[in-house]
Length: 244
Ligand code: PEP
Image 1: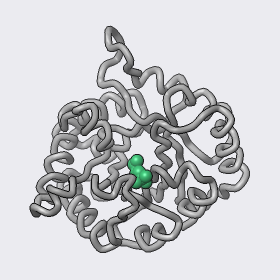
Image 2 (image 1 turned 90 degrees about the horizontal axis):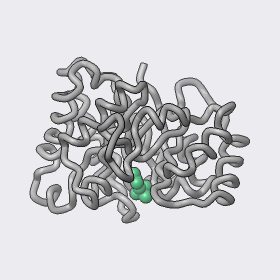
Image 3 (image 1 turned 120 degrees about the horizontal axis):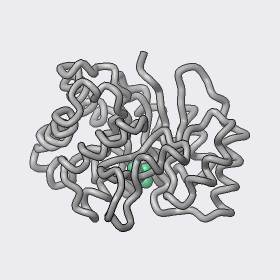
């Protein structure tokens, strides 16, 4: 059975007091129901706070990146082993902001996914096309290239990742893909994953998901939930999305 999952990506937002308020609301108001999981991916300095607040709850937590290296001279980076010490279940890898701003390549992203998995952390691997790529009819080619690097690196282990399709033009723009657009890409991705024995992977959609748009997106046959940025900072919105 496919996992239904909604993950909040706080990005570089938050502060101790605001986090405490948000986490308290999530813990007290999220009612876990069959087959549905919720997680938040917080900035590194707040992992300890998330661990303390969520440890006895039905909400998991994770990081927004992870180094592909185990240890050593990698100033500013954080290893999978360190994330394990803070109880992380997930690590986002290959978010478009990291690919674009930090120049992460498909191969690096795939290596990060492999390192996370080896440490027992589920990587949430993000892939997606830019608006120029979509307009040029390259959506399928781009997402298949990004996915291909991960399949090459992981082999059969790819069945253990969470994959998030996040069209770059929909992230933080308020412009959500239509349910049909999301489903079209998700169906291709799932068909490709089936060839690698990973047809039942949890496949998330991300890109300006809001409470008002979540139900229609999540009703699509190959959409198993969402990766939620901006709206995950608002308890009402995030809870409504998680319930959708
Ligand atoms: C994201 O950061 O992964 C994301 C989908 O952001 P937003 O929901 O704000 O578009």
